[in-house]
Image 1 (tube, rainbow, N blue to C red):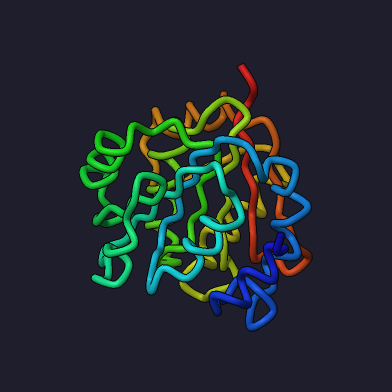
Image 2 (image 1 turned 45 degrees about the vertical axis):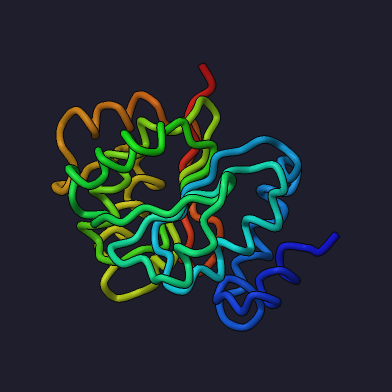
Length: 200
């Protein structure tokens, strides 16, 4: 059975040793759930390489992909355990359609989308409520210049314990403040951030 890094490199995703090396962080974080019947949503599909990595790594999971553009080559891979949706992560209307069509109830949500701070925060504010109890929300590539606002917001959260975002609605902020169990950067460079939903 291949490791997550081996799968990332096999599919040539930027999550493996070819670029970011995020899989060195993901494997110890998610490895114990590898054979669970999970529902994983990744925002940001591009050519579908990382979706195929997750599909192989989690053999019993349903993998969902979401992007403002879904390439034909990725759509052709759709099957009962792999589903893609078209939509804008900065549009609550589109995100509502995603939840309506997918059913929500995700165990893992990964934001590897536009990397624009407003988009990241809108998605987090809207989608966190659709994580299962104990679910994990992970934001990637916070080192990008476009994401620096969110990186600063999350850095402030770690330091003060208070989350504030002008891009989130009051009810979204209140839900996050009441429902987040743990939160922290996953690497010293502050490129990845984890928020975990309280177990209920």
